[in-house]
Length: 404
Image (cartoon, rainbow, N blue to C red; front, side, top):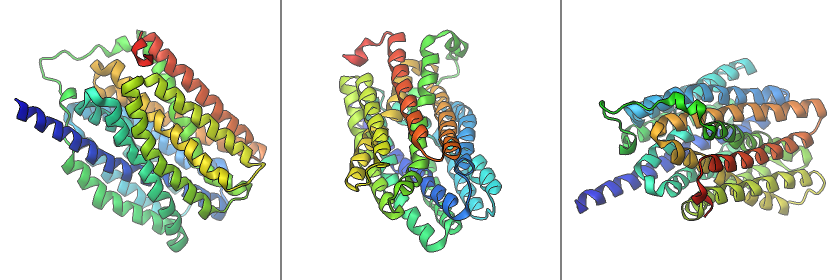
């Protein structure tokens, strides 16, 4: 019995380690879009809203594919879902390298890439690692999501160099090769279905229509929509904005990479804090840091000192490390009986909707008004709404222990 418990624990932590590497690769590719976006607007002459529409379409199709992928994940496990997603992501990136205008990129990176990422999103990764370690869910998800920060650290500067050396089309070929040759084998061979989301044939399926009568669920939807919108707005526009106020792209890419490195640590730290002191404290503290980072960006329009870039990187990292991890953790805590893949698929879908709309809207405001001031204020407002929503999920669920 003791040997079986030890073996299960070792398997669970191995799943976390493999998932962390997979997330590192997935989000390294995904977050590098900010470098491509700056290239599209500067070299190709596309408007901010037009270039941002590529990312917004990607997030929209991410949203539409997330729930079906979550249902399949509950039934057949990660190898089927993640193998399909990794292969399709590599295919979409290769086809993007052949694009000659913005419509081609909207179809390849936007549509195909969005469906691919909807199958291997953070919600589904959280369902797997949270299923393996339900008692250490916050820490397990935090460790896994730390891969997003390391991906940003490596892939944003790498993408900037690849574009400078070979052009953006060949840079996409390199990213496609990483997905097909490394990511796909890693996810199909290394990952296994967690025991927590296995359902036996004689178990009744949950009455998911009851979710519609549950106020916690509606607050969770609003929380999920406003969780990733602020982050992805900054992901898409931060390099272009900092270039606009007077910083060099290579310098900015380096500091954004530093933010990614720091994010790896903040995911882990917030995960531990949420398990120890409550999800609410972790999320609200991180959201405050994200608001502070956005306000600092506004200040940089008036004072372009490089010192403030490292402060921004630190605040951004503290903000990002608390958001997707705590939202998926509270969803798994509150609605685990619905199936972790299913409920996190819904969360992931709303992540995608928010991440589709917000960067486009910030780009639209920039095109109409000529600067990013109102867009940055919009990011602050969305973050405040997410804080209110998180509190309401906890209160509606009578989960006072999350604030103990």
